[in-house]
Image 1 (cartoon, one colour):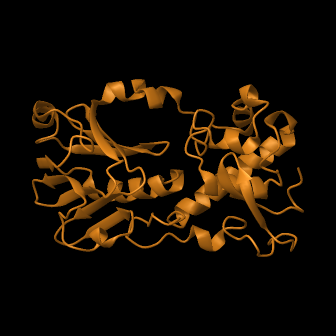
Image 2 (tube, rainbow, N blue to C red; image 1 turned 90 degrees about the horizontal axis):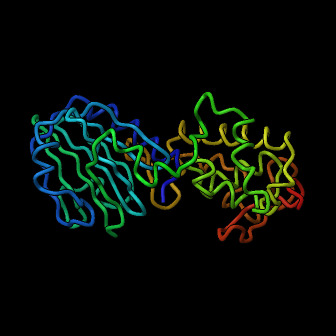
Length: 289
C-alpha cells in the first residue's frame, strides 16, 4: 500500500494536469471499483469541472464543481494514468499499463474530458475504489473521522505530536506510529527511518519515550517524509513517481532494506526482525531496547 509521500506525489502530478478540465463521459467495469449510481454520475460528474485535487492521509480527493468529490484509494495495485495529446502521466503499480495502450484488462474506470484527454483508473487486484460523495460529507466518512492529524502540517508541533500518543502508553512506539488514528499516513518505511533517526528502538513502549525523544522523532518523521516527497516516493515494489519513473527515496534510506549493511552513523551491521507485525530494520548500537 502506498504511504503518504507516494500519494502526495500522485496528488501533485494530478493537480498540475486535471484542474479545470470538464468531464464528458465516465465508464466503469465493476461496481466494486466504482460503487456509484448511474444517476449520480450523470448528475454530479458529467459536465463537472475538476476544481481541486487534495489528499487526506493516503486518500486522494478530486473535487468537482457540482459540490461532489471523487474519493479515491489506490490500495495495493491501483494506478492513475492521464493521457492527452501532448502528455502522458502515470502513477501507481509499475506494470505495462502505465505505458501501453489504454483501456486494457486492468482498467476499472475511464474518464474522458471534453478536450478528449482521459484519466484511467487501473487496478489489477480490484482492491482500490473511487466513490462519489458530496464534498461537505467527506469529513463525515468513518475513515476521515478516525484518522489522525497530518504530520507535515505547519501547525502540527512536537508537543501536539507527543500528545497524540498519550493513550497508547503500553503500546510499542512503532505500532503506535503505524496506527492511522494517531498520526495519518505513516507506513513501515518511514516509521523505521524516523525511529532510526531519533535513535529509538521500535519495541520500546510509548510510556518510556521522553519529551526530548518525541521532539527528535517529530523532527525526523517530517524530514524523512519531506525528503521522500522531493524524491518522488520510495517505489517500494509497486509505486513510481508522477512522471512514471521510479521514486528515488530508497537510494537515501538509512536502515530500511539495508539489513547486513553498515549503519551509516556508527558502522554497526543493521539487522531485521519483526515488530508490530511488520519487517523492521534497526541499528542495534544506535537503537537500544
